[in-house]
Image (cartoon, rainbow, N blue to C red; front, side, top):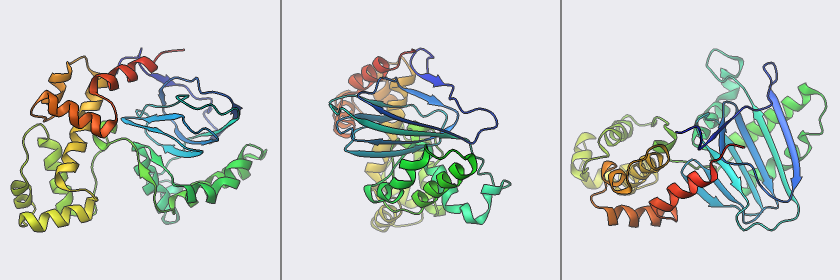
Length: 294
């Protein structure tokens, strides 16, 4: 990606610090799209109508929004859009923690945290019940003067979030450049095959054969393990790669569509607009328009 498009933010988190906590009350979002090396937990309150973009995901938020991002390459921004709130409340926490198996946080009590951090490489959005569970901890975090107690309270927030149900990833795996993983060897084998052949036509019969199953049995099996049917999974993967190319390259819309496995331009435009809410050209224009260096 061109440097002129996305800010790679140098955060105020210093070498020996674990946390940087910023709490703001404001009337508008003005910061452009960016990414950064450290992890980020961002909470926004009283800002309905704001548009949140994380990778190739773009959504208009409601009264409460809580997102965790753990990839240095995943661009993100909260834009004013139609929000008219006079008192937007935002709490941003930047943190730098090592969850490797050899570290303290790599031990058994932190398994759910480690799993959440892996998921959050695509951006992780939390449901309202999870937000309410940690709301008081978040709301008082910036007022804690002692660094140790601030850290333990923040770890409590992360731990509670890691145990909640209903968190959902935002960017697609193919856009976020996150390797596929699965608890099933057969699903992983199929996902890897699709990832290597998404530019070509992929038939249900050949993928089912790869898994050693009949087409009907495989369809049920795949939906059970992924929550999506095969055709939807392939389309989402192709759209992720296409979105990444729209941002990263100067290839034409048609070249990108054909290059990502869509058999004609109108089909690519129609599916992209249905899934992303805008055409490929609008997606490219919006991404580049908001990515300016300040």
